[in-house]
Amino acid sequence: MNDPSRALSRCKKLASGGAKAVRAQADAHLSDGLKQAWEGDLDGAITAFDQAIAVAPDLSVAYLNRGLAYDRQGESARAIADLDRAVRHAPQSARAYYNRSLLLRKQGDTKRADVDEQRAVNLDARYQAIRQPRERD
Image (cartoon, rainbow, N blue to C red; front, side, top):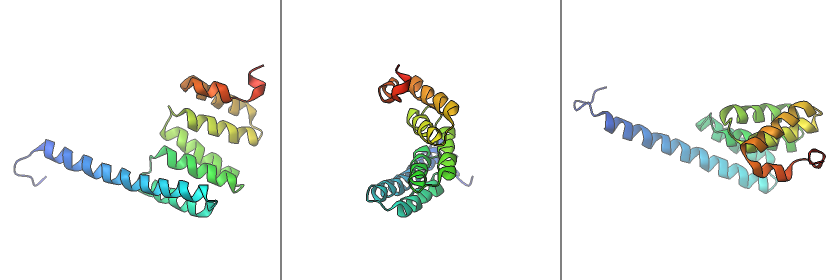
């Protein structure tokens, strides 16, 4: 506001630089969470994914991975809630739909699981090859 030159392009450049820094910080937390999950430290992974979400609340992949970590801990309600958020923040993510279909199927919600699985295939045909065998008959 107090820019005497009123150079909007300069303001946009400064704002986009800040957005890139925020995303880089979120990506660092996400990477840390994945590393911890791969090493078997699910609590540490969840904490890192929480930090990524705190920095970038619309980061779908952070919700997806936190949800998968919750699932591995047996916290299915929290897992589904996070996969719901992942889908909400990235409605074109076949991976989010497919992973949610797996969790829904595990919980016995086959109708919703089938819908999500089909949505994943519609978004990315490669998911056809890994669909549940009963679907290929």
